[in-house]
Image: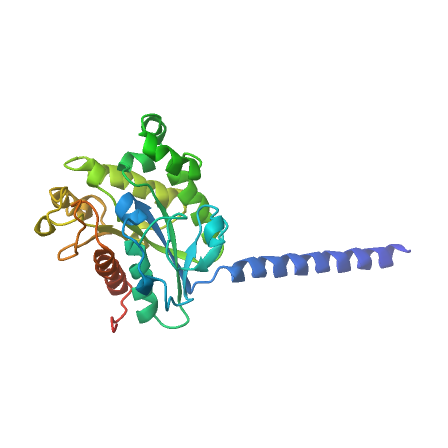
Length: 291
């Protein structure tokens, strides 16, 4: 092979390699669908889902509404890190109905049909907000009550870490559009709660390279005083969250029916609250609410 032939051969190989790299990069970019809107959900038992799932909650779930499984659930035939039609439960393998159920349904009912919605729910019943703090969670974990241990193990002892791990996977598929929080019963009357929430929110913004101006935080009130809420006094603090997190929005729990324990909502309460989360997000998206 003479020198000229060798040079042309090398140029051809280089061109092919550049083309292959370009195609690969294009394929990776294309895999992230801007029309797949993803929402992160975290909190304690009311976001985890405490009410029994009823028949009406399991039928007619639009396939455009998806959930990423954050643990392996043999009983649901779900594998960690994969997307499934969002038939409850949406948190772990045997949890109940949550606000995220009817949040997602409300979005897909009102958004254009080319938009899909996905939720990722990592919540722990009875936990303080400190459990999601990257600095304080190890100390909190060491003092966790026995009934919480099994839940922590399912997230490899680090719920925040699991949420970020799943969120990074999800970012390969779509775009994170917001965060849903329902937490506060275990921090009732904690005047530092808003600042603690801001730490968690800021960490998520940094760890997932999100823009806080484009990533709203939707925080739900606890069971209201009118419904006999045992922790209703915390709602006064929750309503000050937008003063600390500028892009925070508080979701009212007024007239959301509660269970006799005065801590958790009934299934109907979750449906109403979840729809309110969804309607608030739709307004932020500038979308007309028709259903």
